[in-house]
Length: 348
Image (cartoon, rainbow, N blue to C red; front, side):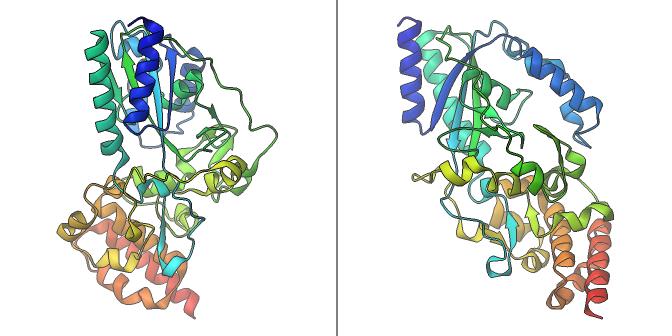
């Protein structure tokens, strides 16, 4: 096959594997995005995520990841469940929508490897795959390929699916026809995401300060959450969707992922924080293995549960919190004591 035929066959194969969007970019370095990443790191906006600062230049140059790389295939899977916000549902704590089913790293990773194997068999060219697991600027490649644009909330936005998409890439030495890109920015003068962020973590259009981000504190951070940050977490036990919920592109154009690619689970639409505190590690792993919730780990989810219960101020949570206050984990004990004091102060 020539480059045009191979490109079309690749796109057809991607759709057959369950990807909802696919586009291709030339594998030349992302100089603008390299500079933006450097500025973000200099501002310590990555908080304790030290891996973000490791070899930052590699993230902008696909040849550093795959010598001889000629093309970057950007792919997306829609995960919008077709339902509105579930705040307060059955008294449960909120979970970011992408984590309400099977771990997307596993689901998309398998599909990407199948696609890369097909491409190598057809072209003889080497390929590598990534899905939020390596030093690849995923949103930047998707923007360059023309899938969408990086919005003011720092998510990739698309005109037909909004931002409820998960990204993956195939880096390949095959010569493919590039799509027209980068995508035009359609955020305009809208500031809905900046205005709605509960902790003002979006410090400027497209820039998120992890030090203020609910998703960072509830997923990536290890150890104690500073007291000054706990109230801002609200009732989010894992992640946060606020900046996506208010985006007009999501409100008007999000479409349900009818094929349910991540096998969404009813029990993950919201979690009972008191129940989380009552699980031992074996029970926790048995229940949530294979889901993105495992990213926060057993100790992190119990810590988050304490923060949510403390923010709610519900005296019915006191027995669970008092049990946690006697746990062997010092971080859990500290958060449980904080939550108890907060609830008791509000009950007076």
